Each structure stands twice: as structure tokens, then as C-alpha cells.
Length: 234
Image (cartoon, rainbow, N blue to C red; front, side, top):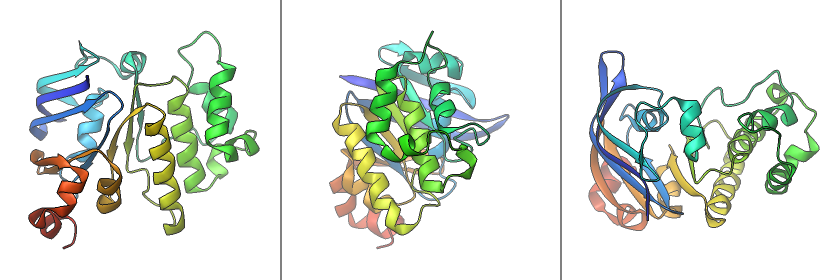
């Protein structure tokens, strides 16, 4: 079943159009990666789905519901979680308070979901009283993902989750994303580490200058000589 379907999407910021006729879909439980050069509009796709850009045309359907024009707080309630690349934790709040903020639309914080997040990211249990802003980049990324999982989204969108991480932490981050997907959550990923992202995902899109250039399985894109030469460093 198609969970997310983006069709002929035009979007941007103010009067500046970034995306032109972008098509993209994610099936229930699927792992999809968007790659492409800097400035291609990858993050803008994520922000547009989440209602953070200027909509200029096209369609965004999630779980059979047209969501373009929805506010982010309404999109969260449909089952979409989003972790932006930057400013994705509340630095002055503790780990526990950040996680509680992830469930702010609920009448009370569900303890079972807190335990699920702590089981998935044990360091958060150890540091639950620590201020988020004093944690390492990798720990903050885990916290941001954990907060997004507090509402048990059907689709988790992650924008550059490995950005700024030490090389020895990158594989660990990808492993955790694999586990989230294996447990049934669909994943839409924008990632600078294109080869590793394509190696792990089900399907990939290559975006160039705000438009679709290629769409294949991750393995097929990795094996495509033109894709490798133009976008993956040969």
C-alpha cells in the first residue's frame, strides 16, 4: 500500500521556486532515500511534505488524505514524524522533557512509549536528567529521533541524520535507522552519505535542481555507471 504519494510538486520559499514537478512515493514500511548534489532541493522536499514551505502546485497525499495546506502540528497527527537536520532538540530542556514534548498532543505521556524509546536508545535513559544542549551531536540526534518516535509515526522523515557525526558513529546511526524500519516504520531519508544510504534502502531517488533525475532500487542506483560518475564520486 502506498503510504505517501507526492505528485508533480512545485514548492519553494516566498517567491523562489525550488521544486519543479517532483514525484515521490513511499509504501507502507518501505525505506526510501533521496540523494543528489548540494542545492538539489532534497531538504525542501521534506519541509514541503511537513508544511514548512510555500506550496505552489501539485499534490501531497498521506494515508489516502491530501495534506498540502495542513499545518505541521496537524501533519504530525496524521502519522508523520520529522527530524530536521538542524535545531532538532530543545537545548535548555532535559532529555526527559524533550521526549515528553514529543507527546505534547496527547493528554498524558504514554509510559510504554517512553520505555520503547529508552530501550532503543539506552544512552537516553542514562542521561534523562541531562540538558539536551550539553550532549554530543550523536546523542542529540538519537534524542531527536526518539522524540519523533513518541507518537509512533507510520512514516519517519530524517534529514541528514549523519551530518556532523564522527565517522565511527555513522554506521551506528544507520544501524539504528535500519532497526526502526525493520520494526515496521516507513522511513524517508535525505542523506549526504549517499553510497551508504543507497546500500541500505529499498528505493532511492536522485534529485537535481529541484527535479527528479533517477528512481530505482538502492542497489540499481549504486550499480548505474552514470549515477556513480555524476553523483557518487565514480
